[in-house]
Amino acid sequence: MKSNQSLKLLCLLLNHTVPQIDTITDLQYLDRQSWENLLETNIQQGLKPLVYSTFKPFFGKTAIPASIQNDLRDAYLHSIRKNTLILHHAAKMLKALKAREIDVINM
Image (cartoon, rainbow, N blue to C red):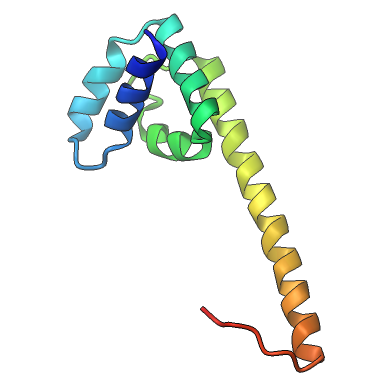
């Protein structure tokens, strides 16, 4: 599968308007090389954590290689750790600004 085909499939699989049964059907026809290409497209697009959370329900229903599942899970967990650290530092900065009576924009 070429890179543009991988990107097209990735977009289709992440489209939540497509019924799950169609997604499972699309995943059944992927060979190992197609999974590797799809994973490479994920790396290029920075979508591994999103792909993991989207594909996780299909792990027992499709032939997603274990190495691909593990790679996606590791990226997802790394993203959680990174975001938790960012939020921790943001909270410390906001607390320091508040202590100095510096207003910040609340969203």
